Image (cartoon, rainbow, N blue to C red; front, side):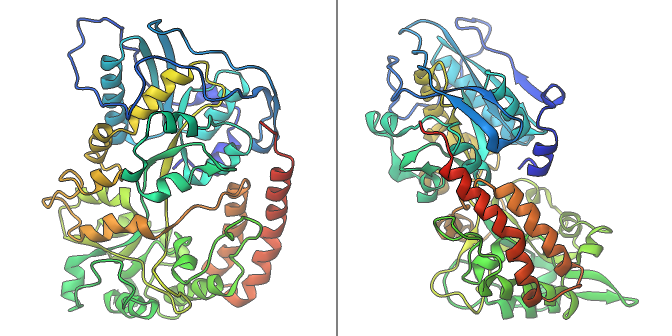
Length: 489
């Protein structure tokens, strides 16, 4: 995910953005080898009018919350059979980007009258999107992190997909429910997941065996594997040499967002009218993490991370457990040859009632609301969400949104770790969707600034609570003002 802070700092520096551009494939090129095309889910063979008329932003300020919008008519799609060009922008790592490129090439082979200019932005992605929109030349289709969705949705960056999905009988039942719910706004479907991943506990199986630890939970059942179990395990996996920790029981403590959820709390409440990180469930989770670092000395502190970052600690066998995303496991960690690793569900905190809960959601694909080619772009969108493309992306570590792909041999390949496949496949069922907060990035910065006091052992979690409230209340108000003053489409 591209850093939100970097995006804001470099909002207008689009000329310096790094692009990987796939050349447009000629409509009738005989030099291009045939590629089996992913089938668009019920995509029409003839272009039709856009589902609805929408407004046209003619000016945009540098900051995301200041976009002004003026209503005009949307240009109609190109006539049937007439060649059109659409643009598609993503923000993928190398292997997924190559898979997306193959899917785009396959789409163009099946749709020779639709040229796709595909680009993969590897730096300052949100800044590039903002600048393109402000300049009146946005991509027709693009990808956004789930956490960024709200700050664009309330300003009308997305074309509603409901009419297209209804017309084409889009196969909604083949997706995790969160793939849809994450990208709904004011009753409209404004996007759909390109991938659905979540946080999990990754562990070094060799270190567990050496410490004579019992095999951990292999699914998301509500029984066992508590915060206290996690703490005892981290202590057992910690080793010291010469008074200095040589092997950490747990690293990546600063990836904190799933812990309040695991303890029954929230980051924001369901209707995003209040921030919840100062509430008892979150504070209890934060204190648990601080105690792991300083009381138990079983987790890597923020200062220790400057010497050995958490990813390297796990990759080099110097950590018994870490917390990371589905995609990290299916890409980075599958390169590990020195030891065996596996995954466990998030532990349950003492305040959690009912099923386990986890932070996650992945990213989604959207169609820009003012695309001049809505029908052609919808055909591409459908193809990118098809079963064939889902399998292609899953083979490159893309955490699939489609349930049929989740249960496929591609995703469940027994030759590839992790061994506990059910932890991976069931995880998205327990995701608490990202808060649809229009001030999310500012909120994260504000919370992290306060949590630094905790990570540096300068304050207790209980004493931190009022500071968190003071820091987040203005951003809740700003979010509510954004909604109140949002353009009407």
